[in-house]
Image: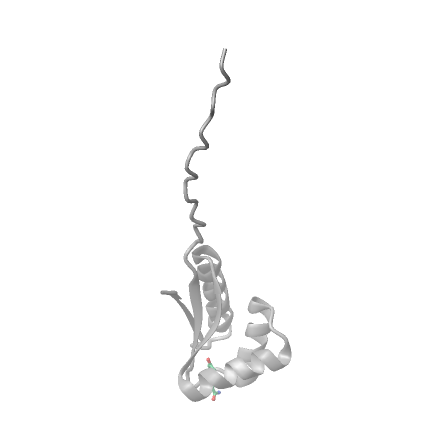
Length: 101
Ligand code: TYC
């Protein structure tokens, strides 16, 4: 019996599917104390003092600042948690999310 020749099959291209990422955005307001914004950024987004201060000042001067990107669930949860921290103290501090294109 002659040996069977097995032709290698063409490889199917595998595309790596990455989940879409969502930006968490900090919005400026006129009432929330700067130090409080810094504390929230440190607590919820695990930033150190100097990073939190720079992010807060960017939002303060430009009106908004992208903080970080996460999967949708994490971005929504963190934005809500951070906004709630302000609300609990009577501040209008607001974090929103936006899909990254
Ligand atoms: N603008 C606020 C103030 O002058 C401080 C502040 C900064 C508030 C950034 C919100 O996202 C913010 N007290």
